[in-house]
Image 1 (tube, each protein chain N blue to C red):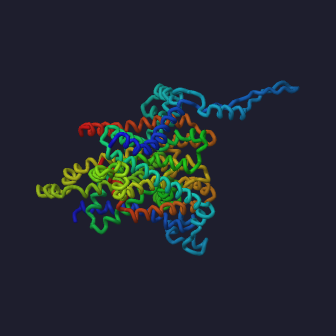
Image 2 (cartoon, rainbow over the protein chains, first blue to last red):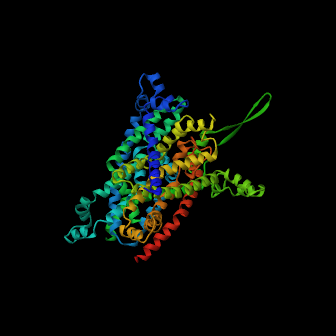
Image 3 (cartoon, rainbow over the protein chains, first blue to last red):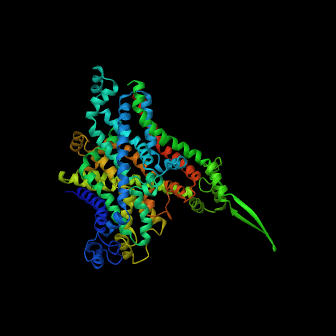
Length: 285
Length: 343
């Protein structure tokens, strides 16, 4: 054990603490009352729940969750998010597999240009695109509806999906579909019967990231959805405005924890795929 | 693949990207050339026994009609680009003429909305990106040296700050550093100043946002580098060790050169994502001291009841030009590689 090794362990330890502590703290605090979680007097209150016991008679309270899910009807936003996420993932994967496959199998120059254009599109800040949508969407009366948001999110997802699936399809040997075509399949049949059965690992990895994009989106959903169609992330932002005034910050805290919990499960089950997805683009660079 | 087949395969994705990414850019550009209509004013004269009174009022009906007829507004050419909220050439010129020292000049320029936002966005990008690269590499090397049993859990813990959406992640941190939160209250106690707030000064606000940015993006660079470390050829490392290279020398001369392609990939991703920094400003309600380009566009569009499409469009165009500058080196390099491969 040298000094360098000790230092590097210390750094890793420090990072892991910094990464995990805020979540642990907020999770624990979400079962307390506001005067404990935001305790000026003594931060130990948040751990033992001193005021929570005084106010509710128990060290843990579900008031924040009740307020968020029942009083503020957070379940509606969750439902909206479910719809948006489900359709965004399905549609962007369908478009993306077809396009990614074509790009991986075409050696023509325009395939390269499409990939470059996708890279440029990937770099566009989403809010600049939103500023282009608003006026036309208002004029055509399609603003505020879930399908509009879904198709916009699908489009924003495409550059990333294309890149990822393109590099994934490059790893599937060309011989497989080409021999199917020698046997008399059309290109689409070769894709359907030879490629589709073996593409699922790549599709699942890409799907995870499409899921994250749709689930986590704030910019698009905040600007393009009307109040009754709001998804979870803009909902948290908007009841931050209203609840802060009424001294009900704990509702927002509970909502934040509720939103983070599914992500934790996602990492638990798909850690390997997420890691391979993060690095997939890098390897092909 | 035949052109025809290729076309049908690529059609859905290309249509989606053209309709909802390429055309909106055009639409934002067109909007930036127009300004919203001014309200129609009517002057009515009412005469009574004590003389005549002129009252000015807004003709709501006529204003509404005008807006309905030409929703884009009035043509303004490049006027919006040159006004005070954007490039503000005349204000900058005036500041140059009037200010004695360079610092004065900078202070005045930074008070202009566009330059203020540009400065914050660039500072944020320029500070967060290198720190995240270096720390990410250091942590990746550290985790790589951990016993196997601890590697998985370390990655598990690290992923959360990256995968959680910026709005929620920054809220979680904000509640901790806020005056009543655990860190905020501790800082007040340490400095014995019950009114100390991280939101009170520009420097502290920027630091807070930058710390958040590092916290949020560090996992990405760490994990990519960690994956890259698994592919470092063991033979080369061993050879270097036999030749007497210290651990430090092995990192500098073997590991880092092996990771160069990954480093440029991570840098590109970080630059793109940091340049669009936006949500943390909303969560931290930091807009009094820190505004990014994305935030001022958002703010123009949010202008209740009367969104400033022209202004938002102009800022969007300027932002896109900024993105183009960031991307040019990468695109040029990829193009060279592509030509070298001999297509």
